[in-house]
Length: 356
Image 1 (cartoon, rainbow, N blue to C red):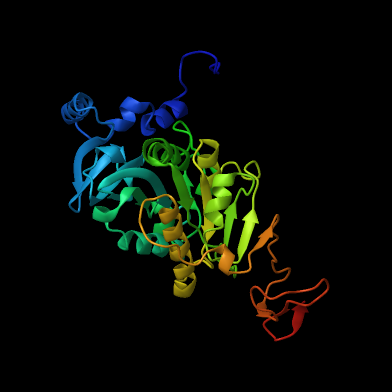
Image 2 (cartoon, rainbow, N blue to C red):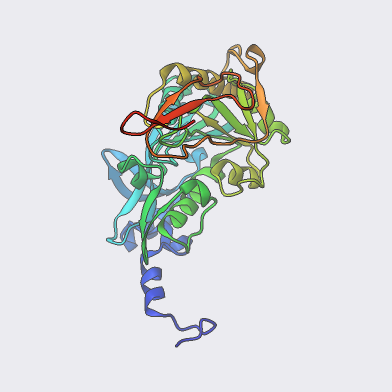
């Protein structure tokens, strides 16, 4: 048995080390030839740039292993891929990045989605916002990421299917800011957080939906004791805000960004696996309000929380079934209910009521 305090490495740790992108130099050069990586890094350093191109292109889009939006040409939209974590077979998971860099300098806002693989309305919300932006008329930058957890999205499931010493499912919204020496999802989160999100964000909005199997109304999650996040949440014409203390779930993406000094909120755009276009429109309107408030785009604010009756809650409880069977809801989302009121009944395969 080898003592872990010694410098020698066990075989299983050697395997783990060989597949991990450990250290900045390894990560930045992971998918380029040594000569290409050295030339690219040297040229970028001489030009004072912090963006590192791997030399690859995927479907005509350049691949970076680190990004500084200030290195991109102003007044244009840029479509890139971030080189994410390396898989066992040597390929990488890539992340789609859209950058609308304004013609004039200004604040930088990051929009993220796809942290869970079963969320559609959140991705559509981000895409809709980005399609409405004209960089030539902007002051500042909006960067969007739509597919952070690609393996989960491929399976259309909430969690990242991970196989290390055993097969498990990893919730990527419980691992931020990541760990470059951890599991594949941990390493991926660290690369995305440290090389893409945090360096390019003065404010951030991480879009989600509810979990598959749940009906969910529109609401925002925000730490309402932080003035910047409170202000962002109140710019949405959305009737509910969950006031979540930062230490309640510190490993969620928006809270990890908040801990790193980036004001961030988490909109929840309804249920999973559906495109709720009317609800998406609410969150697009609110996001455009945030960009206007930060001076990135011009124009009057749309509807905000002042135009709807906002309920601020300090806790949330899922109402889950206690028996197997078929559920019939007796109330609708956002209905007012009282203690003791039936909200659903459940029948078995014979139609018999088994739970209320």
